[in-house]
Length: 199
Image (cartoon, rainbow, N blue to C red; front, side, top):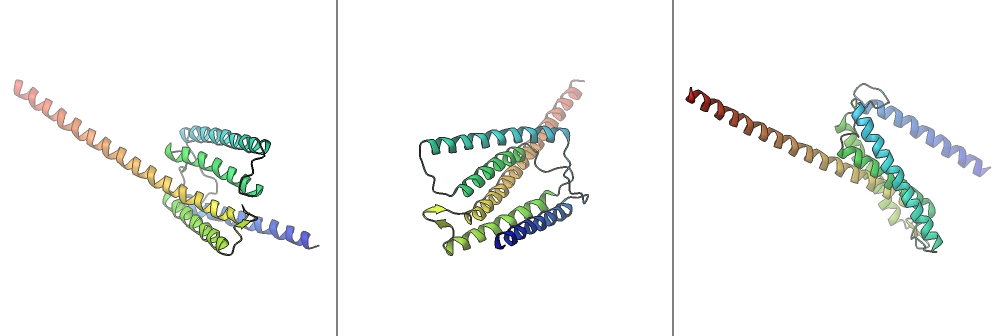
């Protein structure tokens, strides 16, 4: 009976989280729609990102199989290991999409998304730190399920750093283009003056 009540509680909790996430997506998007819209180039970028993410997951699973075959024990429970594989695969996809301008859609508000990522990241990191202080992070010398919060929080923090780096690179590229345009404008002006003098 207890297990049934616990299972129902977990299901209800997941449903509430999904519902809140859908409401939050509507607030984060400019047109109050849940679905993010991408142009054709962004869809191609995201497709490549999913491909790299998939093969990353395959490679990590194969690596885990090799470790098991060689009887090499990793310092974490299987639940943490599988979740870590998922997080690494997600980071491969998001990193590729961010640096190729395929992460934020046409109807997204990047600033609000960035603040949301920072909030979720810090929230999970704090939970992970509290779990470590309570001694629940490690069980029998292995990272246990509470460590998932710490890894999830670090993922969002790293994602926020990646977005900032991409923004800085894009800003430098725009400044370089402006400098090149100024140089071209000066050069064309000089050539024009030279032609007028020759006349």
